[in-house]
Image 1 (cartoon, rainbow, N blue to C red):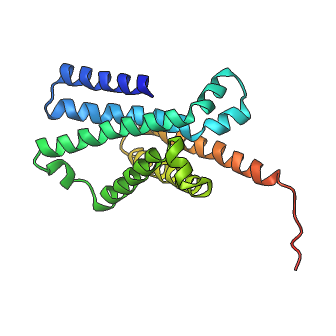
Image 2: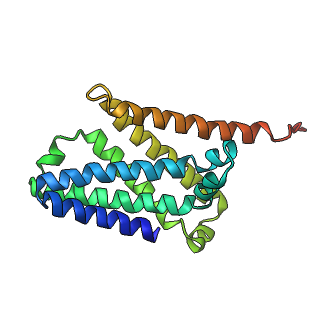
Image 3: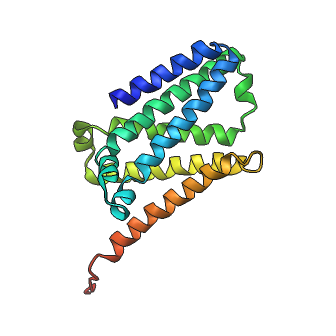
Length: 195
């Protein structure tokens, strides 16, 4: 996570020094951190599925480091949010006025989940929350953020085909994850309920 934070910080500094700290540079940082957030999110989202269906050293590493990938996603998305706020500051709020209210609300809900998931990604806070509540929070938060990514990219496919592969990656990731859920439930022994 420390290396990821360092790499994301260096990337941001490099982009701002190359393209300037004005509107153009900030927009480039927003796009770059959207991509890094996407990669880190997908890695955390499908970590268990990758390990289950393709057991090898790489998928073992991804599964073992899923927590750190998730927190690194939060760092990337925090930089993304700071860049959005800086752009709003530079444009006197005009950059946010063009965004529909439902997208602002959806993004806010996503960030609330990211904050809660990050805060409970450490042993002490996870133990305080309890296994059941922790699992509910993190599962719901992952699916909510998957939905936000999917909505963002699927809606843009009609504007640019660049977003089509990203939407397909999200669909594939969801299918893999749901296959793991299905396999988990189908492997449980059937219990006869007695009155």
